[in-house]
Image (cartoon, rainbow, N blue to C red):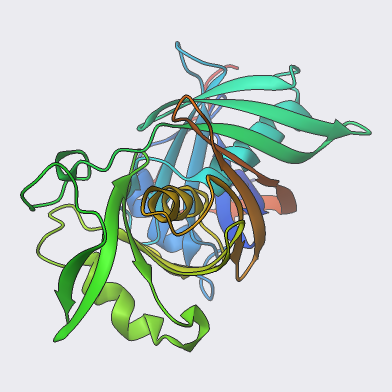
Length: 293
């Protein structure tokens, strides 16, 4: 007799930006908003920056849904979509080295670098950035918010608002490592100019092709890496003339290569890794019965 209802999971990360992934091709998660905070808890759950569901799509090879630690659903995550590509290929859900993944921010095209049957790196078409406050959304007049002043905690800081499918605010600083992000991050995230909250990147341009960055993610706090944030940082820095249109973005978890091509499309290249697999003991009413594959 089975004592507990469990659900299989796989733990993956991109440069330390870790999520718990569940394959919903065969299993339906009834309430991911409730499950995400519990399964992401690093003391009482599996632990991670959130929960990702990988399931069927009628538009692409698969659909990705991502839930932050607080249970809110995010539009897109660059590190997570690379891990989804790795899982789809290595699990046999898809066998092509080019894949398409549906997200709330649109369909993302992936190109997998495979060695000995394992996906080592993934290049992702991240779409075109938008600097329009309407697209973030942001409650600010004008066609853009480019290196403009924003008052936070009584201090005037300049930053650039950019959407890459989800909202970002990129702030140049002298030394990202010296910031008290636990204090500053929430103040930016919940600034009244951002009605849907915002991800905030604190950046230093070391050279035209090298940007250092720390990130405070909406709904999750500081993370080791953020793929959409790295893309937003490169787009903001390049648009302001601070950097080239192709650069390495250096995060606490490692490096991502970001390119902004002549067609205005951002491309992100980075690794994806599996940390472990297992079964999670479910809280009642979180899980609905398995359905045929």
